[in-house]
Length: 283
Image (cartoon, rainbow, N blue to C red):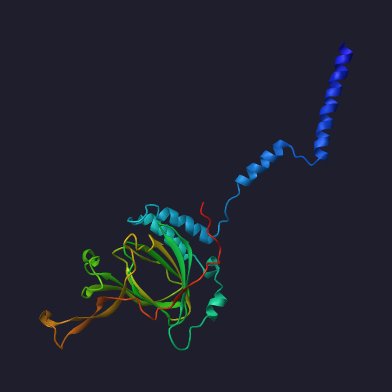
């Protein structure tokens, strides 16, 4: 009986080895290896590109949603990241951009591309040929980061003298006074500029001196439904008169200006194009 049992065990071992060998011949993979492969696939993560890091930073900075202003530490973090960005980080070739020229006559056309947009923030690129102008406009209830990636441009910006009354300004209202925040030329070596809902130059205009590229982060983005539509303005000189009585002996005050609501300029030419740079992966 012991001999028969021994032979039976040997037969069983040979049978199991034969089944495994047959499985290998049929191309079957061990279950343990398949499970391992599944675990490896789960660990794959998005590439850590500069634009991906910017996107993740924006999710943190604007996590509070519309109606909130980012914390100072979050503002500093996002500003530092934008300060290090180059045209190549958004798929723009410096050589190609430098070859772009506006028409010798007429209004130069501005090109823009949306990299990412959600309810809390948006990331966009604007490309301005020489002499192109983005007219004076506001950013209601928004915090905006602007980084000049290439070129040089003139930036002029204002804040309302009385921010509490700015929301009551309509197309039928009289001109309102505002204080000048910026009125200077800037190059791509400058730091990221930041404007807030009521400070920092919330109303601004860009005029390209050379071919320029700007990346804009807006939180939250414009929304007609949520009463954050864009408004365009025309600025006028601010004159001061002795005893406050208008007369011919007034003195112009360069630190102030009158802002008048206007319809969007008919000669504002902007073309939306598809963003073809490194992609953002929402994780």
